[in-house]
Length: 285
Image 1 (cartoon, rainbow, N blue to C red):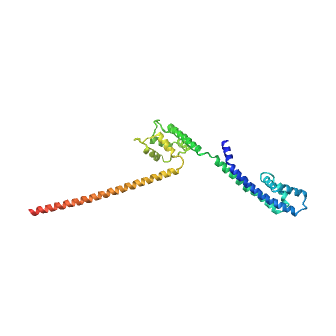
Image 2: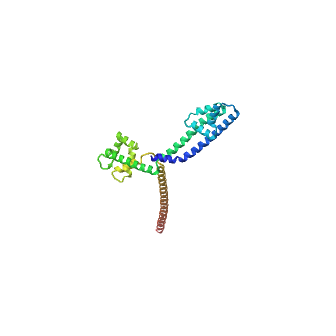
């Protein structure tokens, strides 16, 4: 009921402009038909009273013509008024048929489409409702995965999963089907378990059950823009760290080379001094 009332109130503006456009179209065509009918009556003063009364009843005035056109295009038998104007000439017949086709095929469908589009937009839940529903869905999915993992994966019920228990998950068709229903499809279980175990602080490599559930939750759905941006950011940070590391290694290598050169020069100087001392002692002898 709330959605219906909200849609009705939200469509008032569209209804106003649709009625205004409809009135303009009916007024323009009614003015045309009244003018053509008046010219026909003026050119045929000896017209039969019955035909004359029918023409005046249908298009005797602009308001009467608008009512006739409205009735003919909204479910009433339009052939009745068409028969009244059929004997007045081909021009008014073509115009009348064109009006009926234009209103029923084009204009009414456009107006209906506008109202349907507006109603569908208004029927969408607001942002708070969507956020609350998504939060409840995530909690429900986490509870279901936690229950299934505890009942079917954790054999010894210690709250930890090892490689054997997770590998059994892949070989178990019922388990894979249950997690597929929840939106989890793990193809490379070894890589997935390796990522979870690397993030775990346990030395034995076991993965806590809650960490396994949280890792599965992150696999739901497709990658979002924030996930891609975080991945790009981490790659850029790794590239910066790698560049800094390479620069520091290069600077250290240059320092080592300079130290080795100084050491070689110092060794050369010592060798020369030793040679001179030996030469001097030889000369003294």
